[in-house]
Length: 204
Image (cartoon, rainbow, N blue to C red; front, top):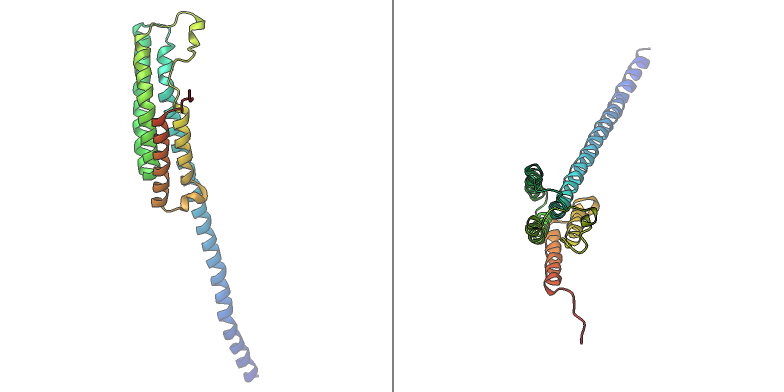
C-alpha cells in the first residue's frame, strides 16, 4: 500500500511540470496574441493618421491653385467681398504652413518634394492672383467661363507629390529612407529639367 501511494505521488510530481509548462504556454500565447493585436491596431491607426495628413496636404495644394480663380470670379469689390477673399487667402496660407511642418516631421524625403511642389505652384499661382486682383468683378454669367485664363501647372505638381507619398504606405515604407530620398531627388531633378526645357518646338 505504501509503495503504491509513493508511486502515485511520484507520478503526480512528474506530471506537475508538464501541466505548468502547458499553462505557461497558454498564457504566453494569449499575451503574445494580445500584444500582436495591439501592435497591428497601432499600425493601422498610424497609417490612418498618415493618410489623413497627406490628404490634407493635397487638399491645400488644390486650394492654393484655385484661389486665383476665386478672386477672378468675384462678383463685387465691396468691402465685405474683399474681406471674405482676403480671409480665405490667409486661411490657405496658414493651412499650407501647417502642412509643410507636418510633412517635414513625417518624412524628410517626401517633404523635399512637397516643398518643391509648393514653390512651383505658388510661383505660377501668385502671378495669376496679382492679375486677378487688378481685373474688374464679373457682372454676367458668361464671364464666369474664364477660357484659357488661370494657372495650369497645379495638376502635374500635385500628381508628383501624390506619387511621392506612396513611399509612406505598405511595403514601400520598409525601403531605407536614404534610398527613397535619393530616388525622389532624382525624379525631382528630372521634372525640373523637363519644365525648364518646355515643350519641344516643331522643326521648320
